[in-house]
Image 1 (cartoon, rainbow, N blue to C red):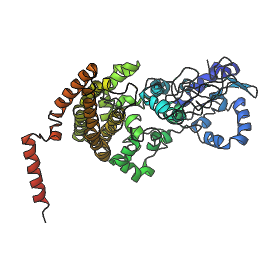
Image 2 (cartoon, rainbow, N blue to C red):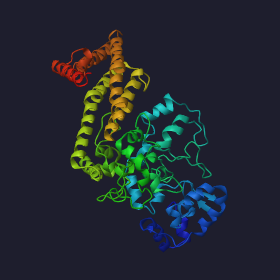
Image 3 (cartoon, helix red, strand yellow):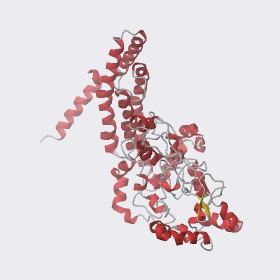
Image 4 (cartoon, rainbow, N blue to C red):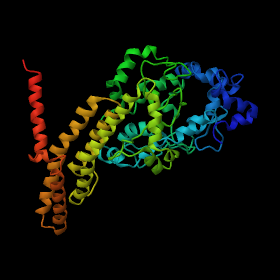
Length: 483
């Protein structure tokens, strides 16, 4: 056992039972602060006054849960070291937090958040480690070096694999790190402090949209920006002083009603649902891949318990949140609009793009991101495609359109198609029989796709009925707004 190993040795099972229950009962906790924690405080109040002040305003303080109760370790723990006569470890992992917060830790362990560290070695990391980076960041734990781009970028959101040095200290390439999928020395995945920043571990802070915005922002997943553009974010900014964020019981429709935050929709309690620390339990599309998939499919790929929870159930969970402020027609129509955008993205861009890229690969440089087309396609689905889908999911029209479908269309027609045409032309004139065959296949598929209903406008072959509709619409517009 890691944390609390010494605590067991110095205390009784009854005391541990109280500690285990402190988070479950308002005003509960240990009868008094342990002598070990008192000793920690006496020293650290001079060296780390900010940390002490944060802890002093926390529920942990009120429950007499101090430094030692969280940081105590057993001598056999991988990251344990001796510190002024006590065996401690720097990292407090989800497994440690789960000693008291069992339900929360179990839900979190079953979520995609806790598995975010599994991105390490993926296509995204080829970018950070090879294309953008090098191996010049050499540390004791990594004598072969690391990419500073990955360490300071990817790992800080997704989590690092914590490397423990011989003296129990942590390698600077992997620590400090509060990535939500951090892989800890005790084998657990995740970091509770990614959302509940130490040492206050504030629920109120975790309820603020900006808390999620540390990771959920930027060109490929701008949920924070989308939220603040949406009516939800506008309402929050206008009424955030009325949101009752510090209330222990934070039930939408009871404790607040002016606006939802990220936590409201994805995690927090309703009159019918308890708090959940599995953020996927109210999501009915996983919009991360090239083609959006149902969340139970992605859960099954990771071996998560959510594989048994169908998307229809998750959608009903989210509708239960929505119905605290909106009527049934409003909610149902929103989902009709959202699903239509997913379908548009799939049929017009994602499916044709995948087919074309598969045919183009034999004609491209045989290294990831070795061709312009690699970057064009990656940004089409990973950036523009995600922005369009996420924008629709959160009712951010600018991100759905100008940062989403507009960018998709512009780069599909003016970047991807010309690159494919040039690739086919080079293949056909290469004199290499295999390349000629691949080029013919690519050219045929490109011709098929561009002559399909979704794309024939590009060739000047717009459906006559559609052309007539466009003409009539222009006529009505001019009549409506004439001087």
